[in-house]
Structures are given as C-alpha cells and as structure tokens.
Image (cartoon, rainbow, N blue to C red; front, side, top):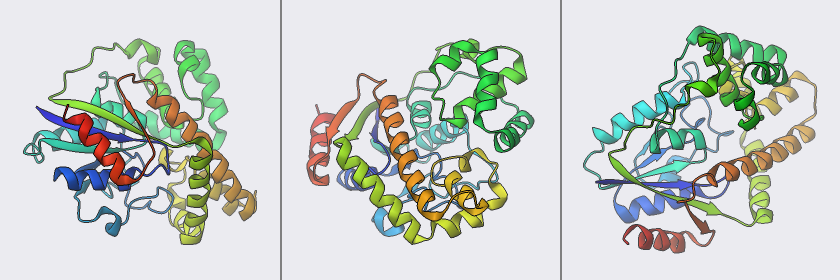
Length: 299
C-alpha cells in the first residue's frame, strides 16, 4: 500500500525545506496542500516556494489553477486522489505538505458528499465584500447554531461553505456531515513541525517584512479585480486592500499582517491537535527531522 506522509505546520514553520529534503531522501514528489498556493496570480503573500527552493523535486498543486476559478476542498480531494491513483501510482511514498487543515483532511480522510451551488457561492462572496463577515456569522448563528458554535469564526472559507449549503438545501450544514467517510487506498502518517511560540512568532514577523520588501503591495494591486474572492479575504491580502483604500497607513498594514498571521498560526495548531495519531516534531535542523521521520515510517 502507498504511504502518504503529511508534513504539517503553522505558517513560517519550515514545511517547504523539510518536505523537499524528505522527498530527496525517499526519491518522491510533493503535493502542496496550501489553499492559496494553487493560484498562479498569488506568490508573495502566500510564501509560495521558489523554483530554487524546490531543488528539482516535482511539486503538484502549485501554480495549478487561476484565482478566477476558486478551488474547494472537495475539488482538491478529487483532483489529488486522481493524481495519486494515476500519474503517481508508482511511488511507494508521496509527501503532502501544507498548512490548510481542511484541505489536508479532505485528502487524508475524505469529505461528506455535500451539495454545491456556484450562484450562491458568488452571492456570498459579494456579501462578504460588501457587508463583512459579522453579518454572515449572524446568519449562520440563526440557521445552524450547532455548526456556529464549533466553526473558526475567523475563517471565511468554512463560514461561506456552510451558508452556501444552508441556502441551497434549507437544511443545517451540520445535518449533512454524516461522518460516513470513504476508505483510502494509502496509509497516512502525519507530522507537525512544532516551534516554541516566541521563535515561531519571530519567524512570522521576519517573513512579513520580507514579503513587504519583495513587492507584496504591487502583487495585491495586480489582483484588485478579484478582491471579492474568498482566497483574497485572507491574511496578507485583506490588510493591503485596506492600505490601498487609504483607511490605514503602511506601518499599520504591516503590523496587522503580522498580528493576524500570528493569530492564524494559533488556529492552525489548534486544528492539527484534532488528530491524536499525529507525531509532533520539535523543530531541529532539517536533517535531524528527516532522520526522525524516516525512523518513524520504517517501524
């Protein structure tokens, strides 16, 4: 049976370097599970790995789609499963690397077959842009209190998805989550890179400074026409839109990106803790972590 080795971690934890080194050791490839690195138009604000950082290792689901056609977790599950079972079937091990917990779980565990409606999706994106997240949260609270209590209230992707299903079916989103999940044709082994909080926050702050210097403002200007899309209602982009709108200055914009990224990292870690079989790697040198993973998967 194939083995899917998952390298998870909060933003700025070093997933790219570790996944590339591990792929070299196993002579395999990397599938990205970062829900914004799919898009060709977004690079700086998503910390997309550069060609030289990939070191010749094939990476899938990077620059694979256009932001004009947003990728859902269900679509990612379908396309990634197809890739693994067809093009990558000859690899005994495949690496899945990223920080988007819902997309990782979609591939590793599977999703319930829940309806979609593209017209409602578009209406919700417009409402998010015009009215903000609080208005949509209030609707979710009134129509599905059970899901409202558990959802990450800073995550527009999950909130919009729930409301899409509720509006399309007149049933609570929670009622569709049957937990009847498909079997996977591969074994899953999950690893999370774990830094002390102060070190992780320093890494995040440094990364944001580098993004600003690398031209994040110009990148955001280049996708202004797509600003209502969910992928751009996220950390590193929505703050720059505020700056471009003139509501905050550049220093405040930068500070807010750092703060919101730190908040996001905390939410990522909370998500990863949901899976008790995950192995937490204390951050060390890349070679030490590779050795630890290899020892674990060979047991």
